[in-house]
Image: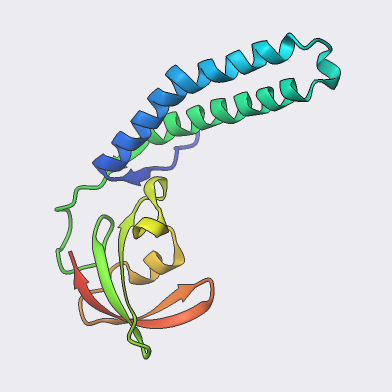
Length: 158
């Protein structure tokens, strides 16, 4: 059997996944089963869009449960104190300035399970994080983005 991929996450990220899993198993499943029951009462299942929709939702919920269980089972917790404090690594927050426009940005590098760019959390698998990992304060780095390459200078790591 092939070794399953590690899912890097903070303790907080794992807790959020556990909460989502609990919700899906205890509440969402019941809601979907109830929708299926109601849709069945409409009669002929071959022409029943409510039934089809409820079954699709059930498949989605069960798939998400399976996905979360796998992620939790293969969780590798990122300890914030791990590694050199002056080197960009998983779990660290990096502040940098874009060259030459001077725009400052700040991101925390997390595992893909808890990435959320709108909250300033980027996946360690993302091109931006891959470009920043291993660098130190004052390093000038070429960062790959969907819009092309940009040059940044690392200002702070914490």
